[in-house]
Every structure is written in C-alpha cells, then in structure tokens.
Length: 95
Image (cartoon, rainbow, N blue to C red; front, side, top):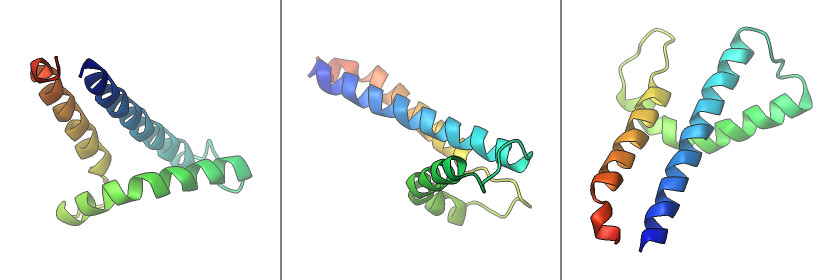
C-alpha cells in the first residue's frame, strides 16, 4: 500500500510541475521572449493548453471576471497542495 501512496504523490508532483511550466511559458510568450510561430514552441504551448484546459475551464467558469487576471492556475496549485496535505496526514491508511 505504500507504493500506492508514493505513486499518488508522484502524480501530484508531476501535475504541479506541468502547471508551473504552463505558467512560466505563458509569461515568456506574453513578454515576447518566446514566439509561438516557432514549431517547437507552438507544439509545446498547444500540448500544455490541451492538457490543462479541461482542468482550468470549470474553474474559470466559476471565478468572477478579474480583468485579464487568470487565477485558475493558482486555484489548481492550491488544490494540489491541499490534496498532498490530505494524503500526507492520512498516510497511516496506506501502511
């Protein structure tokens, strides 16, 4: 059962890093450091958007309009941390 706990923690860590990569890439695109006309950048950006839009979409629909400020990634990161805390506090169930 410890293996299940470790796999769940690994999945949370991978999801966290994917969200962070999406945030950093969106900043770099918005500040003009990355150009989406480059094939590699376009593929990475499209892949990250396709991967995260099903997660961000419902959150964006529930949040009020913030005038261009997207809080969906922050909510996802907080949710991942909350899930990690819940799993760590209940690790005895996996032993």
